[in-house]
Image (cartoon, rainbow, N blue to C red):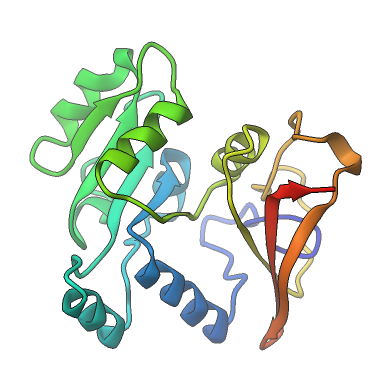
Length: 214
């Protein structure tokens, strides 16, 4: 995120907050993960492929008996998931979590591209994570966006937060933020445990344990 807490600006093209070193750090975390999750809004806006880019890391995954790329997961309440997005046409298996009212729409659009699962009449993060656990996902990497981050943090479901702060100021109130308003566990005085702080080029990387609050 930027110093003032934004994930992007309001221009059509993506604001690149990270540097090459930090992108490589992210690639390592992807390679260590069993699944990568993004929200549907992030998918539509950024159109990412969500791959492990390093050939060496992909080869190591295969040598370890794992798929070349982690399972790719998205969540949607509307089922509005265009079939031409990069997400569906690169990497390995894809999984969609949605609600009962959107299942048929998503399945019709993504026939042959992804498996679609409903968590019930309303979206349920607990059911979503339980289903991933049944599929042997031990480590889930959540890459955004702000709505997903906010929901998971408010529900106290994140084990770690990896925060990379870029030396930029966005200052646009309509731009996407890392976190939104919510009733976070412990309230505004609960201090999360810091696990790691280091410079990655001109980006500052901080790793928090949000469940360990004082």
